[in-house]
Image (cartoon, rainbow, N blue to C red; front, side, top):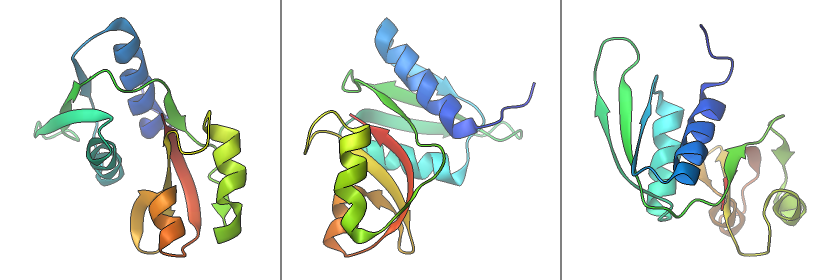
Length: 130
């Protein structure tokens, strides 16, 4: 069986494991984008650490959950965002102002919407988490 959207699969696995109360989740396959997003979530204290296990078929990530994720998901279609439109999408995908993060792919790499707004950058919306 092939996956149409591996990133959406990662977020649904995280959300389902958080709801059940598990402390670990296994993610396969991994990619550079998935690792960057998990690192960003780890830096913002939504997830614990993760380790990569090389198996020769796309690698496996074992991630620690700390119970901080209420909801998360990918944003489809990947909307293009200008600098003055962050509040519009913040209202659409996040429950309150200043609560949660939008992950944005910018020319300077993957970052949160707050960091992109500080650096005066636009980009494409990838995912949200709160």
